[in-house]
Every structure is written in structure tokens, then in C-alpha cells.
Amino acid sequence: MKALHIHVGERARQHIATQGLRPQDIRLVPAAAGGPKGLMLTHLDQQIFGRWLPMGGHTVHLVGASIGAWRMATAAMPDPIRAFAELSHGYIHQHIEPEAGRQFPSAARITAGFTQTLQDFFGRDTAALLNHPRWRLHVLTSKGRQILRHATPARTAAGFAGLALSNALSRKAVGLFLERHVFSSPGEPLPVPLRDLPTQHVVLNEANFIPAMLASCSIPFMLEGVPHIAGARPGAHWDGGLVDYHVHWPYNQMKPGLVLYPHFQQQVVPGWLDKGLRWRHRATPALSNMVLLCPNPEWVRTLPGGKLPDRTDFKSLPPPQRMKVWTEAVVRSEQLAEEWQQWLDSGCPADVLKAL
Image (cartoon, rainbow, N blue to C red; front, side, top):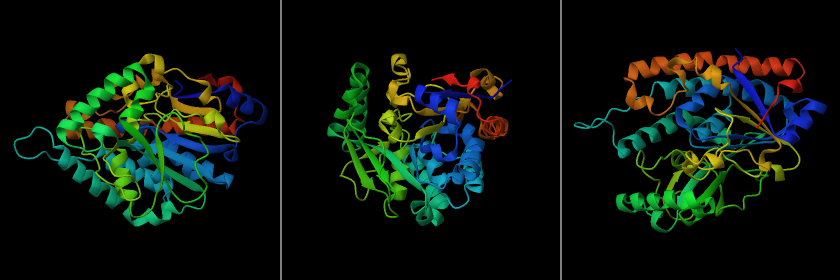
């Protein structure tokens, strides 16, 4: 059974049918939030960023929210093949002991654990990845507005309840509660115009790298909001996936260039609160120049538990069993990278491409 599906927008399909696909065709790589699901892309990430994409010798924009931000920062490290292997191993084997008398660790303890993990993993290479000669890193956070500007328990609960109700009526209502922040490493600016929601652009540097990365994965009620990030407007910053769950942006306005999207599913869902709103999961003309790589859903059902790793495993599986299941899933995911390389080596045949 084939593990890899390649989905494309119409502009990308036409490009591949006439010209194939070369590293220099890719101008931007997005990376979704989604926690442990991102583990399934480890081998694809190693192949793309460690072997294939560097052959283009050009500037590529790497955009990520939450675990996607961690993956894209890893791609910009000096040895991405080794770094992705270490990121996967560290994520699989993470275990934060709860405080005495608690079944699960508090948000404060998880936040402290994640902060230390980020410092240990990225600290020595922060300057190098921010100054990568070709990759431009863009880390996404969601800064609270109005009631969510300050991360007190009462304001957080009331604010996110209001956000959920308002978002169900209109995605534009997200802007009443949250403001997209894009922390970008120095160099060529982001080539995608962002006018759908309130957006601020901030220079990503050594002073704010760890806080921005922490904020990008700060899931409300699971982690604490990051109260202030150097260079950004005052206010609490939360998980970038709240606003940009799968980074469904107007890529069709980016000219020239294609978008290469290693993803864990076909659907590109706009915001975290849109997960249950199926009508927002459809592809749009904004994705016309996208090449999306994802696991075949039938193949996913052959994985341990019949699914991708996800956050529910932290509660449903004892740590040793969870680590074993996730490790096996990541080993199996090497098939995705092998099939991607086979497709490239065979001349990028257009007859296997699927619509988004």
C-alpha cells in the first residue's frame, strides 16, 4: 500500500505537468500546529531540508505555528538531518512529572519544562539558524486582545469562550480577541500579504527567539501564556495555531514560486477552533500553487492504534507504551520520504497527483 499522497492546486498541477518539480521552484514551506502528529513528518523533513531543497541555492521562507515552528527552526539548524532525529527522539521521550497530589502536571510546570527543552535544544544554534544563508524563519503566535490581553485564569476562560462562539459565526471575529504576530528572522520579507486578520510583524532575534517559540506552542489551559515578548506589543501571547492552525494563507498572491507543504492530512484548516467546522476545511483558490505531501488515510489505519500520534495519547497511554507506539509510528513514516524521493527520481509524473 502506498503511504504518500501528493495533493496539488491547479497552478501547481500545471507547473509540474509541463516542468516537473525542482528545488528552485519552492519559495515557501508552511508547517502546521498539531502536536505529536508532526512526528510523522520527521523523515520527510530530513529528506526535504537535509538533501533536496538545499540544491536550489535560493531563499526559502519557512513558516510555522506550534510544533510547526519547532520543525521549521530545526530545518534551519546547521545539521538538519541530525537535528530532526534529535527533535523526534526528544519529543517522543518527554515526560513531565505532575506535582504531588495531581494526576497531570500543572500549566506552570509544563511551561517550565518546555522552556528548558527549548533552551537545551536550540540554545547553542540560535544565532546560526536566525542567520541561515537561505532559509528565512517565521514563527507565529496569537497575541491576546481586549479581555485576552492579560492571562489571568478568569479572563482567559471568559475570553476563549467568547472567541469560540464568535469564530463559529465568522472567522473574521477572531480578530476581536487575537492578533496574529509573525516573528521573522532578518532578510527578505514574507512574500505573502496578510490582510484577513490583525497582523503585526516583529524581527526575530536572539533576545526573543525562545519566548516566541514558547508562545507559539502555548496551548491555553495546558501552558501559560507568555506575558511579554521583546519587540512585540505588550500582552499575552498564545499558541500560533489558534489563529493559523494549518496556515491557510493567500499563497496564490505570492508570485513567483510554489508552496511545498509536508502535512499530516489533506485538509488545510484555517484556525484551531475551525477543527469542528467542516465547511472551513475545503480547499480554496488561495492554495492553487500548493504541493501538499501527506499520509494516505488508509495507510494511517495500519499504524499502531490505527491513527497518527496525538495529544490524547498522553492521557490514554502509560508513558512507556506511548513512547513505544510513537517510536514505531515514526519508523514506519520513513516510507513517506522514500516514496517522495521515488516520485522525484521518476520525473515527477503528474498522473499520480491528487486534487486538494
